[in-house]
Image 1 (tube, rainbow, N blue to C red):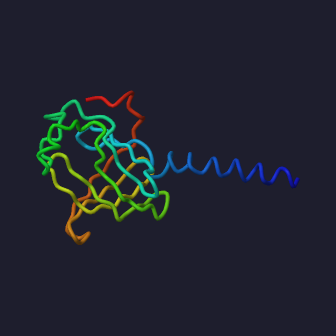
Image 2: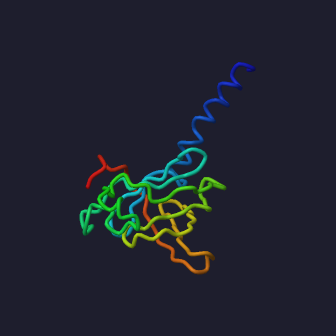
Image 3: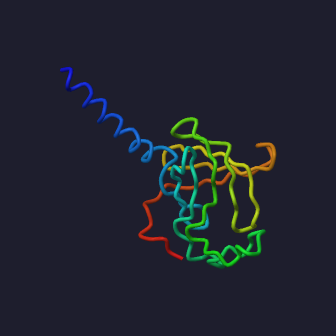
Length: 145
């Protein structure tokens, strides 16, 4: 029995990240225009990376970036969210969100509820922002542009 307890605890620890990825913030999410974003750990925080750009996107380059030297960078693989602190498997805040459609960066928070992710970007106060709902999706085959 004493040997079984550490083994069972080890299995439990391995299962927790899988459960979080299947029902929490981590994983792949499709935003309303069709692009796919991967939310994953990066260091002690969570980051959001464009994993696939929508076929309807008007461009594949970061043409609205305020830094002119980055405007020829591909959108696919671009980190658009960083610094999010997960306070639970379904909620993270304190991060920043870059909107490649406008070239603007906002404060952000995200809340997962099953297969829906409410992503809120705001300036200064959460009251002055906008929430967008993303839907959980399978991983794209490859970073497609």
